Image (cartoon, rainbow over all chains, first blue to last red; front, side):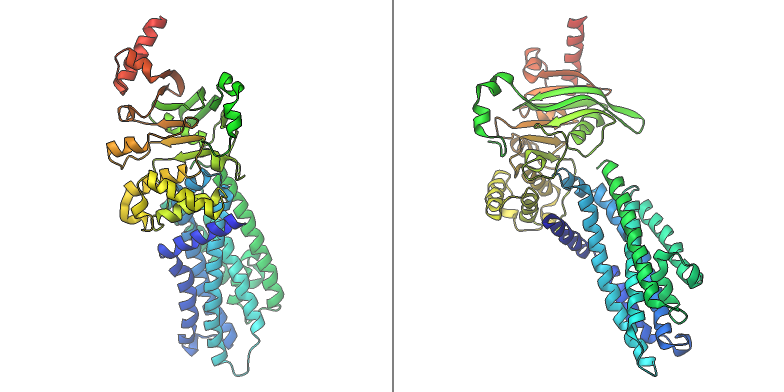
Length: 239
Length: 261
């Protein structure tokens, strides 16, 4: 456990030093704040629904970028020998992988949470009566879980491919998947993408809290499965 | 002195008689991009040896060290280092007993040498006091004392490679695997740094430039198409008046083949 904490701290430091932390926290934060600047004619039928939709756009962009960055990071770490440095000291490869996942997950959660505050403040400012924050918060939490699954997918791709192909592939996979949350009706959106779907369709969602919990659970299960596959891939790869 | 093997064991008559092996590879095979880099290779390296591994193709020697370090997989065969079959995560196991330095330093350049060494010490689960003592010891031995608290980036590749070697030596490993180490360091300093102390420590060095390893190693293993062609003391080359170079090794193989024929 102590080792994992050390590795996660190093991963966070590396993300900070290499400026990769900026898009992970900055995009949702700035995106959330910009929801206030959306003109009234584009801000949706209800204040919360409009804020949810525009924040979903921000979260979708963040999710794609996080997936690409995760793939780039894992491929880069393999290539420059930092994973080998750890593995030669009998640090389990899965621990290295999981520490990177934790680093990304912490930053994404922080960024999406901070950004959602900005979006929520925009919703409150436009609403005629004080809206219920719980459905919105639940949908944001489920969106964070979706982003974590995208990071796990990126890490899986990064364990197999070189830096540039891994990054492009992760973007190519995550882009169309998050687009489904906007293009499909809420009832047919795949469960792990449900958080984004609920944010997008918050106005029409019948049971937003229950739906968020379900989709968050599905996204976390998907993340776990992808991480297990990534760990198996890293275990088999040459460092 | 090694960190994990009791002195009493080393002092025993049986150990002196048995001459234990530090590295044992049995029938290991590894293909890479259609090329058989290791082909049913069997190699036994005794405790305390200083072995140079040279190969044709050149990647074979490097692959062997990566296999020994647990970084590359084998398709067949078994490997044991310091009595351990594969990397384990116990403090007294692999992390302390086996050291590996590759051609890439593999460390973050924003870190200071002290941070890298501290990390290596924490991974090996030493107490903070012990880590501090070991850091001071290796910093002095590998000439990184003045850079200890500066980012590695400032010293560039030469410092990064010194720190990589120092971090491998921090645990006082029984087996040290060196894959094309310290290429960015100047030749004289490199030879000094690679003269690894420790009578019981086994050093296996893979190199594409055998001439640059003269004086550092005492044994030579030459792999051809993944198979062990010769494993001999360097003194045997000296006896034939041959230099430790690729040409000298080729000549030695020819002589050995002629004697056998």
